[in-house]
Image (cartoon, rainbow, N blue to C red; front, side, top):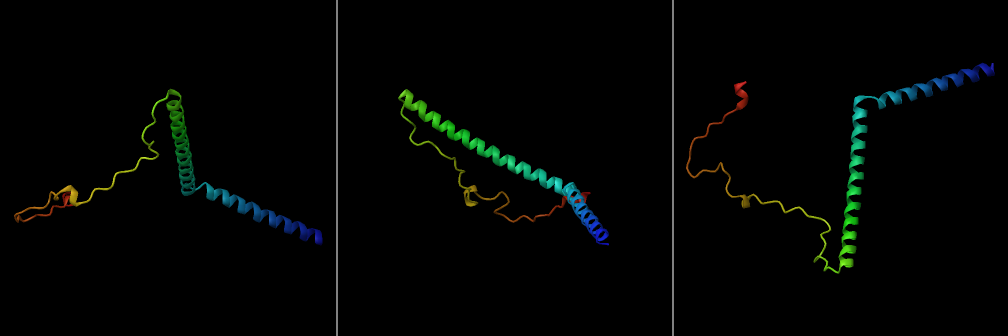
Length: 116
């Protein structure tokens, strides 16, 4: 009697475990999950490429300094560590908008979607 109960329980537990494992694997193969996995791999690859580029840049700066020292050249004023983006332009700096007029002309709104 206890043997049958043991084997029945063991079989039920194995069935539940196998079902859960199969369902987990099926969820990994859905299009949404595959897209998320691909996106994660792309982001990870991007981070690795960025780290590689920064390492190459640091090596270039170091080697340039070694060569300047070996050749007896004056080093540059200050090596540029990172290039900064220019400040965004203000709206006023762009001048007047092309739609402003000094005289009043009636404007007709035209909706392109009405043609279709």
